[in-house]
Image (cartoon, rainbow, N blue to C red):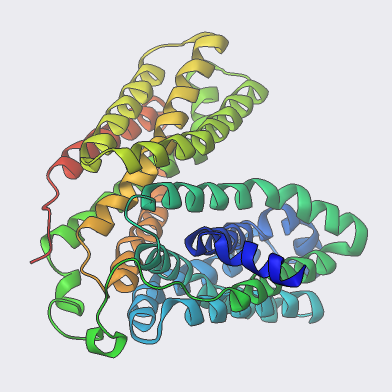
Length: 402
């Protein structure tokens, strides 16, 4: 029986196991990003601090993540993605367990900063492992599963954290979340490395040599991909964070209706990612797939800006926006992979996905100013313009790094 079981395990494609455990890590990363949101009222009440003071914890998390993600990518290409991903999971999990155990506001802030260190590894390590170990004819599907798992982490976090809070208090919820990270790290430790599907130079040979060092990151294809990711973050930041308030101010849309439409948008985006993986696997011109999806998104945002659509049409247009925002994601990742030399996946993905952080910093300033100026229509106009600008950016991307 034991021999038969071992034979069955060995017969399964090793890259399928790798995709599963890396997707689990991505689930944890998104889960941790949202860990404070549902628990914020309880944490704030426990420490008697203002919203601004409690927001300092999130600022620490995001600033550290933005500053250290690219260096983490270099470290991943040097030492190996798997070991760094395990370390990142352990750092994040430890930070949140400490938050639950130590009764101190400043320890909370410090631990969110430490969790930001752990957060730096996910994108560069995940994409490096997938790019190196998953066969080319499966990589688009792998990227879609990876992204979908992250979305599920975001979706699962609020309800599960509140459930743990009701059972063990908010400190117990933080400890429980930390244990999830420890569990995934243990699983990743047990999953053996695949033979690489793509040849790569030895890690130490690619730490700082041209074009695999910083000069690679300063080439036109990589910089334009960074800009592309910034634009995507601007689109998401405007559409997701200001959708409800902008609709209410512009058309008097009921908050419940707007929130329901936003929820369906996010749900359709998740399913769009899965279909996008199939498209990315079969398509050869990933830039044109992304451009088509972004063009549809631009049109949908423009329709919302121009017309009071009513409930049914608003849902249809919003769902279409969400569906195509999901479809483009695997192709987006394939575009980056296509311009990345073997052995440089960590640093390149770490660098370009910093665009999410940069866009996340700028987006609230832009869209907040628009709302403060009393121009809610411009929220959707700006989303449409950023999406259209993304179309021109992605079709203009150089094919290879110099």
